[in-house]
Length: 506
Image 1: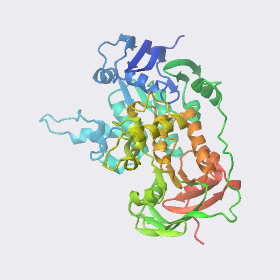
Image 2 (image 1 turned 135 degrees about the vertical axis):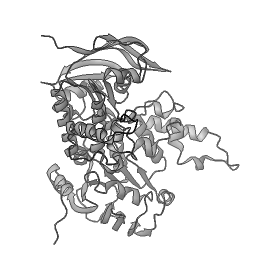
Image 3 (image 1 turned 30 degrees about the vertical axis):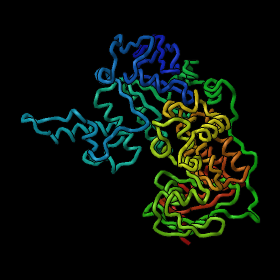
């Protein structure tokens, strides 16, 4: 018996000015399945999801949901039909309660028109049970719960709308491995209840674990739909990038022997509020040092404090043996330090600016003439040089950066700092939300920097990234250093041991 098609996509295309984002896509989504959607950044995945949820209107083609041809399709109609999209960047209101977020715009009323709190909290509790949050008080403010729980609240919100189809865009990208397992189990439970899911992710191992079928996109086209059973990660990667990639990145050289190596950065007893507690370590010339820890371990806060972006409450910082205050980011830049933070869109990019402007924003003062004017020639020359050097895929340097894929946006941020030729580079989740092809290119950039003497501290939630790139890893737990692992002893088991428990008291 043929499985029922709940969503039919027929010859759908989407064009933006100068760009074909989606090119003649036809596919069927089966009722009650988890259909994974994979592809490099810019492959058309998010464009298709925005069309399927009514955010974008297709340039060509037709859509039919549950047998109904969709005309004048928009997000309101999608909600009425039971189509809910949960974006990577969650849309909850931090100052409101969990219950208020779930029933936003639909709060139950008493006969007198007053808020029916008893019904609100009872209905919320039933929904929270469905997503594994039965112990969460519906009155809790969203800002008081972690990212994983917020993700679960978003799903509960979709279920409150009696959603038939959930579209999940990178739902585990900011979760710890344990939190991701919880979310995947919730997805399995929802599938048992007959809810259909479209699932975008760059985590190919999770896709093999959770999906029924896999739709592979490349350059705006649907390349193939695979049955998950019998599919290997290598099969997906080859179809996604159109070529074979190596199983794991290998640097040209690793630092095995520290004898006689010069410390470029020394950190002693660093403290940042209650997030970082007495952290000490050294970074050596040309070394790639990893800071490994679970979310909330203080990893990012260490980098932010060393770069002067966060105020530190104690500790000493030395660069090339000289003590520095590091009270602001300007001082960090003067000391030839650079930070590529975790939040690409919120902390790095000027989304309304062009590629050229985003690359040149730090060194712009150096291009001014004696009258304080910027003729523009030098700025354009440097932007073109780094677009070429880092293989940033863009129609031109005057393209708005918001129109680039995540991987190319990240390379533009890296270019911004490479212009400054930093001695010390801080990388916070450098490949988060980036496809496998772009990851390989960014790994190559990191390899070249290290080879040329740049000292790097990297924070990454991906175990394989730490294993492939790092010379040494320092593990953190609840703001404290719990271990130091040299390259020869580096393993996933040793990292997890240090990330999940405090250092034993001597």
